[in-house]
Structures are given as C-alpha cells and as structure tokens.
Length: 119
Length: 119
Image (cartoon, rainbow over all chains, first blue to last red; front, top):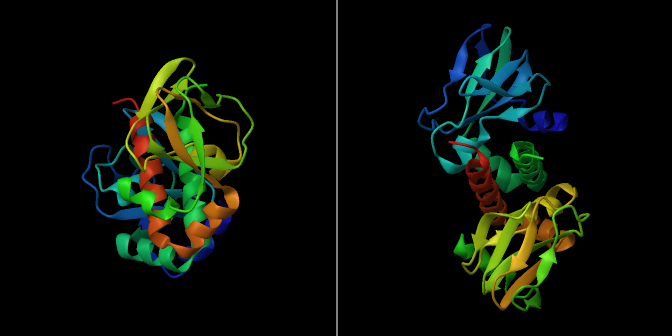
C-alpha cells in the first residue's frame, strides 16, 4: 500500500532513533496511527515479531486509533526511522474526503486479519 | 454495529433454511458480503466455531469482498435465516457516499482482528 503515503505529505513527523519504542503493547490508546516514511519498525507481541514495517507508506498502529482500545502490539525502531503521525481528527478528515483512503484502510485491515489467521 | 443495517434497507435478500451453507472456507471470492437480517449464522474455520452471528445488522463475509481472496471461513445457517447480499459495486457506492459506513466497516475489521489475536 505504498500509495497510501500520498495522503500524508503534510502530516506531523517524528524521528525514532534505532531501538526507540514508539508505543508498548497494553498502552492506552493515544488516538494516533503512524505511517513509515524512512527506516524500519518492528511490531512485536509478547516479544514475538508480528510484522516488520520497512516499506515507505505502510501504516501501523491503526487499531487503537479505530477502536480506542489499548495497543495490541509494541512498535520499536530497528534502525533510525521517521514516521508520519496521524491523529484521530486527521484520520476522520481523510476518511470523509477520500473514499479511496477508506478503501485502502479496509484493505490493510483485511490483510492483517488474514495474516493473523492460522492456515 | 446494529445501526450498520440502516445502509442495507433496499438490498437483495436471500433466505437460508436451517443447515444451509452460504459459502465454504476456500471458495473463491464471489464479490459479496452479507448482513444478517434474521436468524443465526455460524462462521466456522476447519469445523471450529469462530463467531456466531445472531444479531440483526451484523456484517460477515466482508474479507473476500475487500481483498478478493478465497473465503477464510464457512458460513452456515443455524436456524432459518435471512440475509442482505451486498455486492462489490454496492459496497463501493456505500463507501463513496457514506463515510460513516467506511468507519463502521473499519471498526468491524478492527474488532475481528482483536478477536483473532491470542490474549
């Protein structure tokens, strides 16, 4: 979903030095999701690697933004990284203005759901 | 997500006698999702109950519509049931016209994703 990055050109950015944790499994929702702009971020659950986010434009941390429940995984930079920060208001605005953004988000959730299911 | 049913008033409907299978795990995607209007439908993977859909307005079968991959579960009526059938075109139309529909769909996918994750 590299092209999803097109929606995030003007967003707030955050720099993550290698090793830094962006959020921890169990943290209460902070109303943000993230888009990788540069680098590599590991998503971990109970220390186990769920997914390595290392392509520009990949969204992560969207679950807690959507349902406001605690973080289901830990996100930790594997190298110096840069992410766009998308807050709840910006997310709603993107959904309202760009149906293709909504369809991309659904496709992303569907992919994660398939990946979470044992074969 | 009972209120999601408001979007489906004029959709095509299908009657499912008790015991009838709507789709089978592994079936190629037929471009449809379903909304329960009446009755009870079991979602099964490899014979194991994943979810019982027994509240009016609950959407199921959305994954194969979104990503066009084979059915990830079997849907079988547990009693005489009635469902609304939502094809791909109608789904796109609903997403384009109703941002709140898109947000509901994301919330549904997020809930299923949470439920699929071991605690």
